[in-house]
Length: 169
Image (tube, rainbow, N blue to C red; front, side, top):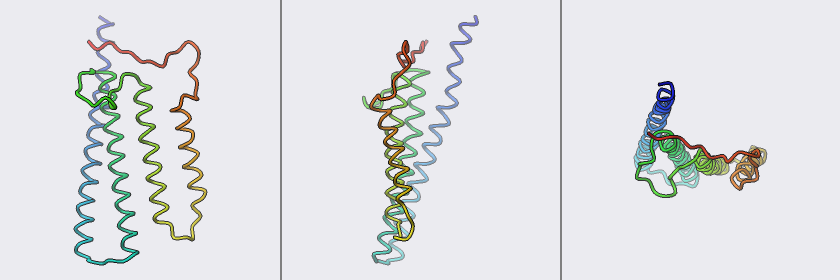
């Protein structure tokens, strides 16, 4: 009886799955609406200049950042579902998640891209007066640490496999 009850507690994760999927949908739709509005406003303004091109580029980079964040939420939702509920989803091979480490690695990969996009946005918006070196170094250190983690430089304690297995009945 208690074992059956404990086995069913994994369905609590459905709350996180639903929340992640809703967050993904909201952020991606918002980014899509922003892109359409930006295009319409740009065509209406009919202002072609180097400064306008820089502003347009920066805004589109920020919109791409929204899409990437929406993708992070999607990966989290799908990954949690696969880990705790069932692995019966029809997903491309690169998105199949079998362990918690798989989910962490996929998320870290997307986080690295998001950080790179954020830094690129700072570079494009740079006015030559602010010092962005510190910001760039901080982003580089975080990316280097995450890459080190992905490469397996962080050793697991002896006796652990890092594999999370759950009964899916």
